[in-house]
Amino acid sequence: MNDLIGAWTWLTTAAHWQGEKGVGNRLGEHLYYSGVCLAIASLVALPLALWLGHLGKGGTLAVNISNVGRAVPTLAVLILLSLTPLGAHEGVPTLIALVLFAVPPLLTNAYLGMREVDRPVVEAARGMGMSGWQVFRRVELPLAQPLLMTGLRTAGVQVVATATLAAMAGEGGLGRIITAGFGLSDTPQVIAGAFLVALLAVLVEGVLVMVTRLTAPDRGVAGAARGRAAGPPGGGLR
Image 1: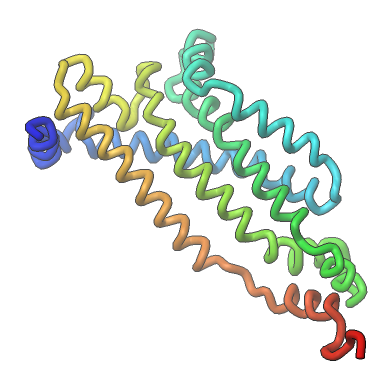
Image 2 (image 1 turned 90 degrees about the horizontal axis):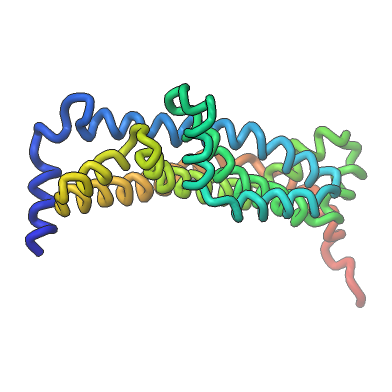
């Protein structure tokens, strides 16, 4: 209980929020690493997954890439990259390691979202005279959006939590508060740093949920294609 009270005292001390080593600066570093790597991972994974899902090919490739990405220890990659010439460039090892960590959920969910679109719906859209691009943009993508955004939320939360490891390689972020606490044998500071990381992950999850709802695409065309695929009302056996 004393450690929890000490953590609250640490968090409410104004001096801990100011300066280069303050919470404000560490939070900015953490958000920078997380945001940039999530954007890069999205640019790498989503076009590939959506394209393969649209073609109906490459499922094994997508799964294998995801499995390899999950099997790679992020901390080990981060430390190894820090020992290479890339380690001379501040932040680069962290960004690469986090991108590799963020790709699997993005790739898997986007691909599965595309493949779970009912094929009769796609064929009905083609029967309505749509081109391949129109089918992708107006039918497949809207119907795949829930799983796609699930992958984005998963990757976002994982990256925010894992970016804490950047401190292990001597880089910035909220993890530096935790490592500094260990170095000083200051348990309240360690608890405060862990709380900040957990709170940020929850906030990121909430923001991405709101973004999912606000950016939900119009499913009018997709719904029309689905209705056509189902056939006219009363068209069953009599």
